[in-house]
Amino acid sequence: MRIKSGFKGERSLVLPKVILDIMDKDPLSQILHVTDIGYYPKARHHYRRRETPIDQYIFIYCIEGRGWYEIDGIRYDVEENQYFILPAGMPHTYAASEDSPWTIYWAHFRGSYAKYFVASDHNPQTIAPSMDSGIFNRINLFEEVLNTLNDSFAIENIRYAVSLFHHFLESIRYFRLYRKVGNTKHDSDVVECTLHFLNENMEKHITLGEIADYSGFSSSYLSAMFKKRTGCSPLTYLNILKIKRACELIDNTDMKINQISYKLGFNDPFYFSRLFTKIMGKSPTQYKHTPKV
Image (cartoon, rainbow, N blue to C red; front, side):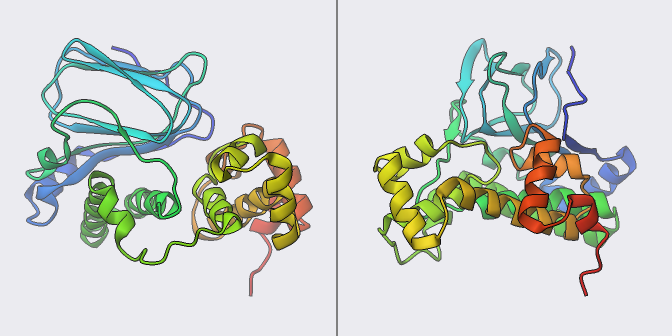
């Protein structure tokens, strides 16, 4: 049994046993709660084999790259925009692809309601960006669970994190309903669709070709339409979105600059810093220490 740790930009939290004991006894949190939670960007050589079953369910959401898992003697390949949940009490193995290691949000969880979130089969489930997808909002829910528990283990924090995680799993398990609610209007405008696509893929490194493929137009035609409407190219607009999000994370979380860089799809923190400086007029560190009021 081995696991490669120390991924650049990673964040993780393992809850202490004394806190888990409280969760197991609390009437609200005992139905469903996390025991470990985290985010691994570009998790090269990530590998875990458990021959002895554990009493936790394991959720892994691949937002970029590839990986695989094996359960009941069957191997399943995982692509970007897919998730899977491994049931408690079963031996399993999972790992990142060697040539394109996955970037994942993951959590171990348990409770009396946990079993209801596991699909009837073990196949990975796909959640691809579309005009009415809510990937960005869903990831924010996950982040709030992580940040809430990281901030404090007070009972109010525990119960709030439990309710958030429950909602997060509901949005994953019943994602078609999650997309439908609040989306009665569907704008077919190609630029509006592209703007939504950029927002949903803010944490990835995507190319103009991928954006054009999504829009259904050539790269040159899409770029011309997009620039006419917004004043900049799709990739420039994406970078502005990324830096705007970076500012929010600097202002509202305790994440380190390099963690923010990897979270937003920049494998080179120095490039991220240069881009941040170009767009904001100051470096991330300077921005962090600049009074906002």
